[in-house]
Length: 114
Length: 115
Figure (cartoon, each protein chain N blue to C red):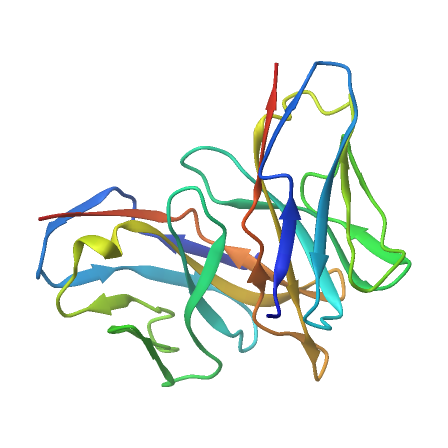
């Protein structure tokens, strides 16, 4: 079945380091792909999304490109800040039981040290 | 301001009691969802609803019940049949465009603790 696999955390980086959080997926058809962020004690916020192959989603310095050939949607940021510390979730939309749902990765905790 | 509200933020319950978690949205979204999140884990779908007076079970519906009498509201009841209810509960909503679920928007969550 359709699924999302994220790199395990926690990922610990120093401030201003380059960030990559890997996300790969298996899906039939052409799902939309999403990255959400969850700050401690809060709900999830949409970070970025891409709806078709080769689309690049970007927001707040984060980017991810929908790569159909490698079934990937890796999250990147050139220079992280302490305020980026959070849990990041990759997700795809798919049909299940005749309804569209989001399939979630397990989340990757990011810790940025000053 | 448009958004999703969940109440209460923290909830304590004694074993054997039912408890209802509130979720309201003023985004005019058709679809609403309930997820459960356990520490260090991802989201698991409990129930979802795409239209009023209709809802479907998600992956972990046992011990939970919902209703969707109004488009804006999707309350979740955690019953005494749920064996391990202590968790963080998240409500979300989305539009449905061209038959596809659009971006899901989340409320701030309710942390339920069973004493």
